[in-house]
Length: 103
Length: 504
Image 1 (tube, each protein chain N blue to C red):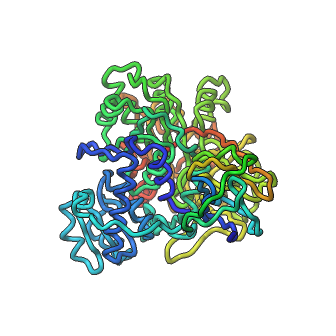
Image 2: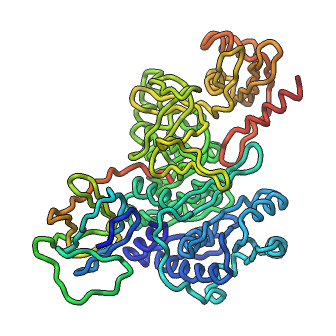
Image 3: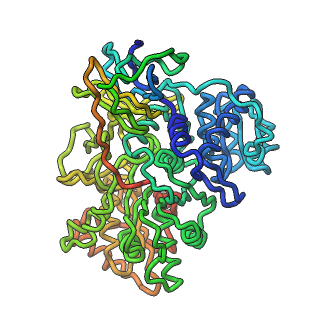
């Protein structure tokens, strides 16, 4: 998997999910969705593969996901059935504070 | 990272929701229509080999379409102030060639004749039949690409073009707006100029939250009130002078409440809000949440917000310091840091006045051809003067350049104006520094009298002396019919200053 850089866009190999990297430490890490490494968004569809049952909570559009050590944060830009993980540890959904509408 | 991604998500999640309504043309784009239109107009921009897209027209469907089509085509979007003179516009256009210019039909010939300017009328840009070569492929995801070039209002000298990259604008939206958070029936009334950062921010945050935007191209209080009622508008943003006119108009109509039961949220910003206006507005809109937003072009819009709860607490407060919060611009947004520094760059404590510095991912602080003014640690000097209280509420004190240096002492015009405004006969006040042989600079004050009232100059001077100290007492005073403001409600201090200097 290519390096996760801020602004980079990746898609799941096993579901419809897509993410954009919001913040990354620059270290080489493998981000999985549904238990399988994600691929760059422009890549052609991959054959076969299924969402692993331990990685099947899903991701929701517009939600942000973060590793426990906060070194990687991504935004879900397309919903999918697979969950995100690094080294088998599921990313956590980041709570965002609702702000007053200003514009 | 690209602002097009915001529209792609909205179009994917709620394709058939109305996105923008252009009342003048009686046209509405749904989110999927706007997305597809952006694809085809990106093709039109690319086909002309343009390196920038400029827009010179009032708010209309071409405004969001221009922003997103430019982003897809990978060229900066440059909204221009259509109120400038033809000479001024020509000078700006020459700085952004080769340009694809979308403008009102009466200006196509004149500006289209310039070298490297391909001009099309707004109606042609909106006509699907005339834009049938959609762009091939996706937009770029390089966060460093430039999304918007915005000419700052340029109160002095040649206008500077602020550079806003995709990373700044997307960071701002992601940190301040929850995706799809607007209920389907939400409608936002947008009346800020399309060439102002608030106009750009309004497009992006409405799209990301899934709100329906009603565009009001030429503000009048009557039209605003009518549209707000007609479309059951739920949210709106106004500059202080607009809110003042809305309040006046409602009062002249004899209204005790605004009769806009759907209006949940009314935000304001862009200039200093007089205490009397916001107090009246809160009475006229008793069920509306008020928010005060402070931001700059260079910071991708809002960096500080005084929210609805803070408004209610302040107005109900029985202490002077509690009520003073109502004229604060609130606390920093998440991800935004603010410091107050003195002339030597030393960070000041609570309550001390200095220059406002800001840091955060949405902060650009870069100008085309001039580079970045952000320091090595990422801090941007706003040139705004202010202070922060113990809880991080920020108070603006005017521009740092407006500070009056009298006999080596730094005087804040805002502080003196605030005192003058407490006098019952004073409707408005502007304080500036004018050259003075003895002191270097002297304090000059222009005041506007409330209708029917008379002003005793000596009483005003005594008031300043009692509340502050003798060095703050205006040496020159004049009564004006009204003070000069620009269209976003910023006091044009240089005009006041020039007038005093002329009379010395």
